[in-house]
Image (cartoon, rainbow, N blue to C red):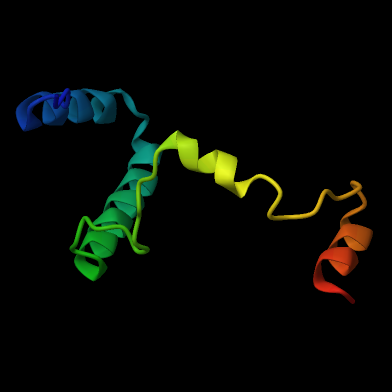
Length: 84
C-alpha cells in the first residue's frame, strides 16, 4: 500500500513551509536543494548501494553462539576476538 501523498500536495506543503521561513534561511534551503539534486544526478538509481537480502527473523537463532561471549572491555574483547 503506497501512502505517499500526490506530488502536487507535497509541493504545496513545501511552498507553504518555504513561505513561513525568514528570508535569511532561504540560502540554506537553496544549498540543501542543490545538494539533493547533485546526489540524484550522481546516483540516479533508487537501488541501495549494497545488496539487501531480506531474511526471516528465524535466522537469528542460527547466529547465536557464532561470536564468543565477550566481557565488556572493548580493548580486551577486541584482542580476544582477533587473537592479538
